[in-house]
Image (cartoon, rainbow, N blue to C red; front, side, top):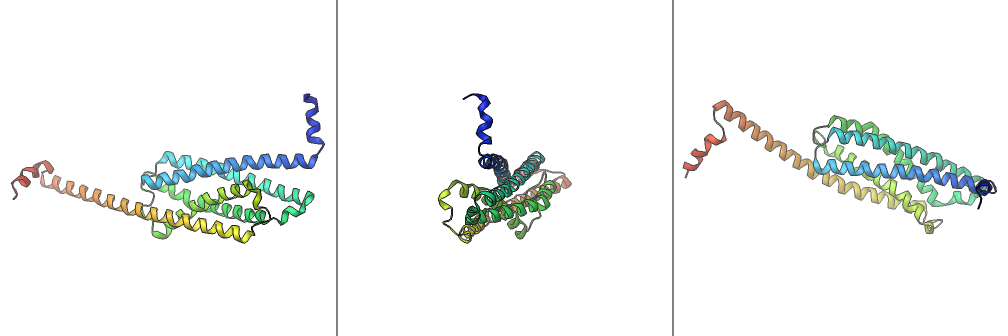
Length: 237
């Protein structure tokens, strides 16, 4: 096929060309948002497991969150483009319950992004060099866990819905959203439980460190250290 005939492939069917362009941009937004959101979730998991927030990873977290925002904006732009395209060329697709569910999920994802920028990121900046949950109560830890669960589920569910055309016009939006909420609740419960255990462990470690520091201060005040006490302990019955 000569290169000169390529323009005709796109101009012969403008509607199909528009749909292909929207799909291409939609995939770019999805890849950028999903990949960066997965990175953010993994970073939060690392913060959970290590307990310590480093300034370098906070910088990575902030950069990845900006990429997520860009991907999300592109999803909204192409999503409205698809709705307009369906309205002009195939209005029946606007009645697909899967489309309604995806719109609500992306709306929740957007609100969660606002929460991350308003609450999560400032907290991470303040906690740089300290444990993630230091000074946080149970409700705050649960909110952080819920935000991570919403992010993970809300990015992967639309991908799953788009990957299975068998779900078109089969499941009502209420059933899809019920499964969505149950997944979020389950992941939130697990993440909150893990966060609580890690917070207790961090508290115990901090208490032990404070006890050792206090003992060291006492030894220094008395002019002796642990080595000075060793012979005494050997003479004890």
